Amino acid sequence: MSATSEESVSKRERRVSRKRSLIASGVMLCGLALVPWMVGGSLVTPHNQTKLEVPQDLAVEPATISSQSGTSLAAWYIPAEAATSTIVLVHPLHGSRSVMLDRARIFHQSGHAVVMIDLQAHGESPGEAITMGHLERHDVAAAVEFARKRNPEHRIAVVGWSLGGAAAVLASPLGIDALVLESVYPTISQAVENRIEMRLGSLAAAAATPLLLWQLKPRLGITRADLRPIEKIGAVGCPVLIISGNQDRRTTLEETQALFAAAAEPKKLAVIAGAGHCDLLAFRPEAYRRHVLEFLNRHLRGTFE
Image (cartoon, rainbow, N blue to C red; front, side):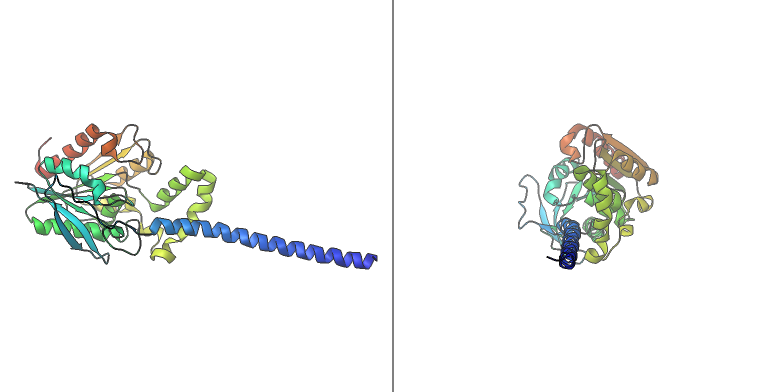
């Protein structure tokens, strides 16, 4: 083979090699973009259940509540004899009103009526997508209005766990008498970054967080600025109890303290030793009852448990 022919073959081989490299790089980039998109989709996909079992130990009255989120909320109302207050319970992400039953029992035994809802796209409530508090805020407002119409003379509190608490803050002011926030994120940016860092480390979190947050607009029509409870908490207009675990990696103690600092008086911070982002009532029942019941009884009835 002549030198000219060898040179021609070499050039063709280099072109083929470059082309293959470009194709491989394109495939890799598509893969890197596809994974966050799939993860984002899993987070906002509705988390419904066909039928929730009605507790037999409580005098539950099933109800349906219309919400400006665009759906009808499945709800339970639990009256209490001689009650002068109603507590609205709002569940966490991928939960339902069933996960709040132990709280309902405690508050009902203490003499409060209870309203329990499934947020839109959760439990038995229909919805197109979970929106991390944006649409769900309308559900909290609807539940409060239901409680107010059911018992116009009652004082009203909201107890929101994680997503439920964030939705309550984003819905504020609700014109209620007390608010309990359990393990609530200050901003969606921090919430996403913390969860990625837990699983993949800080470098992955720095790279993947912007990709996940970018999806808010095309998927849900909102931005990260719409999901910042820390900017709304100062205007809730009622006493606030913020309770969290000091080992929570999804909403860190520093973030909880920042949320508390942004709240207006009267306010109280309760930290459960050893608890992560978990069911605080199940983790430390005595401490939960002491902090939450004392707070609610003080601001709803002027009494102590």
